[in-house]
Image (cartoon, rainbow, N blue to C red; front, top):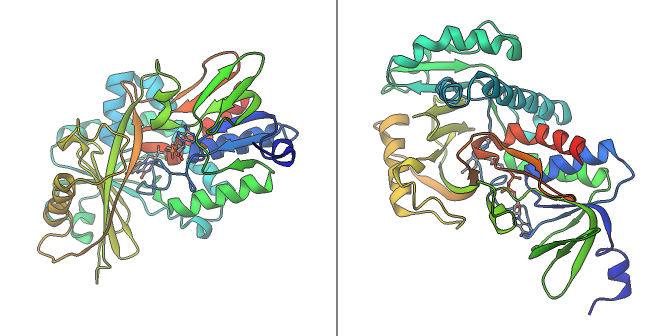
Amino acid sequence: MNSIWELDTFYRKRDIIIIGAGFSGLWTAISIKEKYPDKFVLIIERNTIPLGASTRNAGFACFGSLTEVIADSQKMGWEKTLELVKMRFDGLQKIQHYFKNSEIDFELSGGYEIVNHEEPLSHIDAVNEKLKAITGLDQTYTLRQDKIKEFGLGKSEFLIENPCEGSLHSGKLVQKLLEKCHELKIEFLFATEVQNIEETDKVEVHLSAGLSVKADQLIYCTNAFTSKFLEKENIIPARGQVLLTEPIDGLKLKGTFHYDEGYYYFRNLGNRVLLGGGRNQDFKTEETTAFETTEFLQNHLENFLKEVILPHQNIKIALRWSGIMAMGEEKSPIVKQVSERQFCAVRLSGMGVALAPKMGEIMADMI
Ligand SMILES: Cc1cc2nc3c(=O)[nH]c(=O)nc-3n(C[C@H](O)[C@H](O)[C@H](O)COP(=O)(O)OP(=O)(O)OC[C@H]3O[C@@H](n4cnc5c(N)ncnc54)[C@H](O)[C@@H]3O)c2cc1C
């Protein structure tokens, strides 16, 4: 049994409970507290640190590559595509507005896409024209053949540059967001798993050992782990595997790089290379919420590293890890009300760094 002191403080009723302390939960809490300073907001996180995708990703401050924008426009039409691009662009501006570059190792070093066939190049002018209203640039995407040699990417046919994209340190960003939450008096229960929810004239959030916390409203920021609560939402878990090399003397690579419609992504982290992806080589196995790496995909990534990024070099791998993303049939995130007192801000795909800041604002307007 709990003491009266615990029940009156840590487990007391709040105005709003958010489940999940990743980018989505943290930005949502911040936006709500900024809009409604008097509301009591509690974030419940099942792990001792946020653990899903936000501390496991590649740290691209993602704007989106040319082929991705083309593919999105063909699938969802230009209106929705531009809405998503704008959300990411504004999200990246917001991150830079809240935190100094040096605090989160933010570098606007440019994003690049390697393309090995000519077709996408024929769309560059039309896409640039569409994006001009968002980026303010005449040429958001430019062909940069000169940089193929500069970066040592000998095996690449075409290289397209996008100056709106950068890189950052995801761990430092999560820490700064936590600091901001503490400043705003947002409360936390870490290492506390939510088991189920009951909604009446309030929401009761059931934890383990017969404990529960009540609130007026509840927001799911549980991304890939949402199906446990909201079965009907189209959310498919997608594991992303990553490797990081040991430091490499004279590394030429600088920036963030996309390959094969974003299925592979790599960047420099100082003088190391961080490489992730390859999910399309083993789709079914990677549709999981298990935090594991597989020999098959790690070998595949290592081969990619040796063939495409650092040919003829003897490279040692320092670290390997995985994180879990949330995908769906549609590319857009799900930000909506699911019942009278429950809401969700989930399915951030491979772009959560840039999407989450604006999703938080939308949620603060919705509650
Ligand atoms: C390998 C990899 C590389 C990526 N690279 C990039 C990139 O370079 N750039 C980019 O923009 N995006 C990238 N992404 C995607 C990005 O990381 C995600 O879109 C983003 O982190 C999602 O944030 P989130 O808060 O929605 O989810 P998460 O960070 O997964 O947070 C959800 C939280 O909910 C908690 N939770 C779940 N269930 C419960 C429960 N029952 N009770 C309590 N707590 C619960 C989890 O513990 C978790 O901490 C990548 C993802 C991966 C996996």
